[in-house]
Image (cartoon, rainbow, N blue to C red; front, side, top):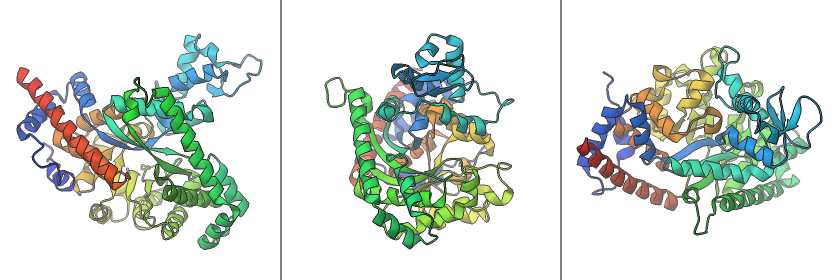
Length: 474
């Protein structure tokens, strides 16, 4: 039987749990009930849906939306659909046998189903296309319009509330392509100081102002959709949303540097933006070729923007996806060179040079790993005993479950916990500690973080009281 990882988790996460608030007997009864239903998937889903979950720290806004929503918005906005390419296109629709109004797809069951499959991992056929390629191809097929970003945020907040998630950090590029265009104006100078000075002189503050205005409009639309501030406000209004500025890592260095600089200035000037992250496939040509350069960019700019936070996709790789040497340094450089305080995915950690030393360093620094079990399965084919989650826990590295791209992956936070329970065999107290870790390692300001943790502790007391009563009735 697997040795419990609870002692390591307890030392890392449970320290500081509200003294006197917890009822040990209720927690014990809840843990016993959890063990009794672990193999009963319907009961386990119901249990975990009701359980408080804290934060989702790793979620891409564009990937958080289900394909059905994109189809509905496209139909409402007069956009188009391609029968051949199985993608949504902006209107007006060209006449011809391939392109038709998206609204027509809502009346054609076969086309509708094919579009949903093409824009997600639903009914993904591994014999026809690997999961990695299917996943990343979906984004070009989605309906993209700036006026629907607030609707996307409303959907993400609504689903988080339904799953008892109280805090979201969403990855988003609010300036669109403005920072990248400014980077092209500057050109690649090869010197970080000169690049920063040039971008400041070219007016990067205007890009930051554009980004702030875009966030204003997106959040205002979210409030309208959910009725926030009115008697009819939906539960999603209570979900706290913060933003991570996302940088496109598969682009030329001058564009990436300009985006990283924008992210640092934006997170310094706007409290709603709490950090930055690099996105796009880590195995892409430029992402692999320039990985160390990107880490040095972040490390150099952090010297100018002390206190700004960084979470990085690192180790979203698996054996065979890239040459072996490409697996040996990404997580270490993210931690040691870029100074990342959190790591997204970290799947290839045991392929790194001196992996146990790296794990010990991450534990010592308190670098949390954002674990995306569904995503790692469908994109990389890594799950169960092949996943390093238990290695992180055994080494005392803090971890938290997150969704990554719940709309594309056809998942949500509850199902991430189901996978943790059934595939990783985690105990109730272990997943409870992970929920609390998600808030402790969030980039929220101290006052907000303290409040959210206090509310989570109270929610767990109430939840365990209900579960203990349910157990006594069995």
